[in-house]
Every structure is written in C-alpha cells, then in structure tokens.
Length: 435
Ligand SMILES: [Zn+2]
Ligand SMILES: [Zn+2]
Image (cartoon, rainbow, N blue to C red; front, side, top):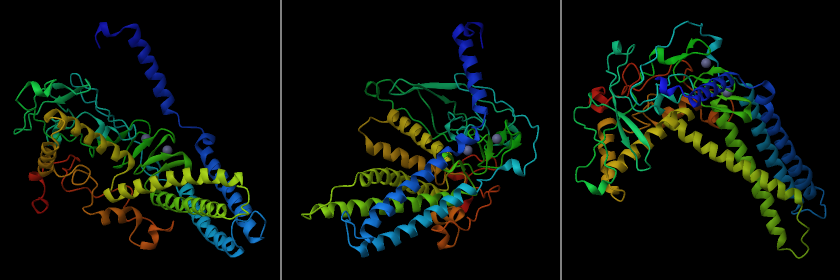
C-alpha cells in the first residue's frame, strides 16, 4: 500500500474491517442459535390447536359452526395426525443429528497458508473459509500451470481490465495457456466496430484439493473436501450446505437427508391444512345458513400458505441440487460463473443475437462440458447416482427420516474430468472413454 493510500478514510476502513472480522469470528450465543427451533415448535403447536381443537372438533361434536359432517371431521383428523407425526419425526431427526464436525476427529496442525501474490487490480485470492465462496466466486485466474510444483508460488499474469455494459470494471487475466483464444477489450459500443470480441470460458484454476487451500485458519485443521467453516456455529462443518436457523445448526453431511425429509413433509402438511380449511370455508358459503368465518381460520390460512410455500420451494431447490451433487454454497459458485459467462456473451454479441449467443455457449460446452455437470468436481455421472449418494439406495429412505446416503462425509469420489488438484480440464484432456 502506498503512502497516498493511507488516508484517514483508509485507516477508518481498516479499523472497521478488523472490528467486522472480530465479530465474524465469534459464534452466535446458544440462545440465539436455538431461538428459531422454539419458534417453529410454537408455530406447529398453534396451528395444530386451531386445526384439531377448533376446525375438526366442531365437525366431530357437530357444533353449529361445523363446516362439514362428522365423518369428514374424523377423516381430516386422522390424515392430519399422520402428517403431523411425519413432520415431528423428521424435524426431531434433523434437529438432533449433528451435521458432522471435522474438529471431532481431525488433529490440529500448524500448516500456514501461503498467500498467493495479488495480481494487479485483482483482489487477493480469498482462500479462507468464508462459506466456500472462494472456490468459484474469485475472478477467473488463468495462468496457474497444471503441474503441482507451481502451487506453492502461483504466478499470476497482469490482469486485462474490461468494462461491462453497466460500467463495472472486470479483470481478466492473461491467457498464456489459451492458445486458440484471444481476449480483447470489449468496445464500449458494439455497433462502432466490426471486430468481435472473443472470450474463452475460464473456469477457476484454484487447486481446491490442495491442502494449502483447505486450511481453516480458525480451527487450524486441513478441512476435508467440501467442508466449510460456519460463522454462526463457529466451527467447520462436513459437506457444509447452509446454516439453517430453523433447525438451530448447520445442514451438512449427516443431516442433509433429514432436512430434505422435513421440508417434504412440512410442505405436504401445510398444503393439507390450507386446502381443507379453504375448501370447506368456500363450500359453506354456498349454503343459506352459513356460519360466520372464524378469524382463527384466516390466521391459519396465512400461516400454512406462507410456511408451505417456503418449505415447498426449499424442497424443490434441494431435490434439484442433490441431483446435480451440489451443495447450496457450491451452487452459488456455478451461478456466479454462469453470470460471468452471460456478461461475456453480451460483450461478444449484440443483445438481440440470441442465436449467436447460443452457438458460442454450445462451442464452450463442446470444449469443456457443461457448467455444474461435467464442470462439477463432485458430479457422479448421473442424476440417480447423485441422488442416492445423499438420500440412500432404499426408496423408503427417500421419504422416511431413517437411513443415510451412500457417501462418506470425508472422502468424496472426484469427477475424472478434473485434475488431481481439483481443476476443471478441457474435454481433450479428459480420460479417453469420457470424451
Ligand atoms: Zn473452521
Ligand atoms: Zn452453522
């Protein structure tokens, strides 16, 4: 940092960052971590009371305010009890099963992380464990050669800055390894020139499997692959997916399956309550002697509608991610790579030229394989294999909160399309039977 950078603002900014880091290192107090578990149980308790103690009871004891027959009341009650049992069972499983902590069985080490020299105009490579973003969210860094000897002193060529349509400056590193591709600065106005800008696909070259890149500075351990440090819990978590306040800890290797079972049953229960209450209330409006609408029914509709939608979206997202063998944190990296690529496409082609953009993307896919599939270090080759690695082989286990997936939380088979250090290779470098 030059003297001119050491302004008053710079010092204040530094102090602010230090304070932020100190705060970030402290795990949340127990009561804060578990608060939402109490809230969830209270929510389940209240909605069960309204459904059973008011809605079903009115029908079973044939109250004036009953919205259906006695038989309907009994059937609704039985179905509700079954669904509630499944929700409580899977919730119990996800809350009481630890996500898996590597600190329980991995010895501390004093390995110090070598800091790669920051390239001009580029942020220093964040290889810390801030939610694993470092893997793909870094600016693409071509230039690390493929041999392991280059790992300890990665040499980064000077960055070539380019400007996006929004005026943001992006930095692309030199492409000494990319013989057929040339990077040019995109013109500010694509109409003003006939020379099209050509951008290659540039996957991250961070050797994510190298021990230096897996070191947790807070726990002083070399993290197993896919492990990340959770700031809220203050510890590393095996196959970290996300920190979920609703279950009071992280969703990771050992409880991911139960989490999926929980959101699955919670969305079914919520929709059952929502549909039956709404249905009978609408039906009763057609009768001449319709009872007044119970305000508790309205509250229940709002709660189950919102909670059901939230759980259902969560369920769909996780089913999709499991089939791709991506954790939530890893999927953010792929999304950011896709956005970067979208940015490049809009600089290479005119905005309306969708056909040309599609052709370029197809060319990149032909050269590299698809982002998130062939380009995913953990992809097992098929949706079924990915699914079974988390949810297990037994079909019953996909619905019941028992059993476990096929994968070992510490050693994961890697995609043979990647090199030994975990870097995505071009199709021509893949094993011949996969090309
Ligand atoms: Zn850690
Ligand atoms: Zn956590």
